[in-house]
Image 1: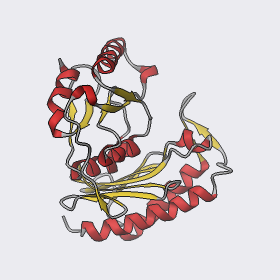
Image 2: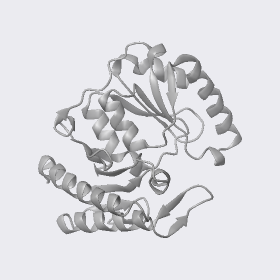
Image 3: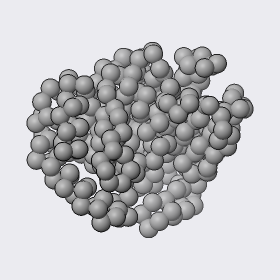
Image 4: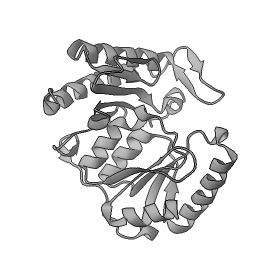
Length: 262
């Protein structure tokens, strides 16, 4: 690796914060909306923010790959790949809800090594780089300390449920019921980046992508933040559909894995 991750994370924090200001300034008028399907869409603000972030990164790292959720990628053969979600939570943003973030992650040879998630409405910046810990505005994060599965408050992401195959849907519904019977409480926030950050702070106790269809851009930054906060995370092959990401404290990770794979 030939870049200084700590210097780079400081740069990305500045980029994310500057685009958060743009998001807030344009919040009253999101501009043209482009529908990807009947429920998923992007606004003109998404496109502009993604373009701004790509421009800022490519000026510093012209040989790096860039993969945006809205506008595709470039330099796909590079060992360094930036994954960008300009607005994670576009539906919330467009509806004047405060649950949205700017998420930027860096992969080196396929592994997350740097992540920044900025929540403009709360002015909170979560960040991490490999080997240096995870932080919220300078305060080190160490995740939750729950020790019993029955005490778990988990965020369960459920993307693409309208397109699941019959086998996937049967597995998904069976496991969702199982989790509700074993956990203290389940959330379904639909925000991969912030859910990961809230797990790192201890506001949540576990994160599960129960269909396997969360977009890589949504979790690229969150994955390194979780790892550096001491959480265990792994994509599990359940034998149906794509692998499902499970992230949780090490003390309860194996019991949660058993619930999903039994």
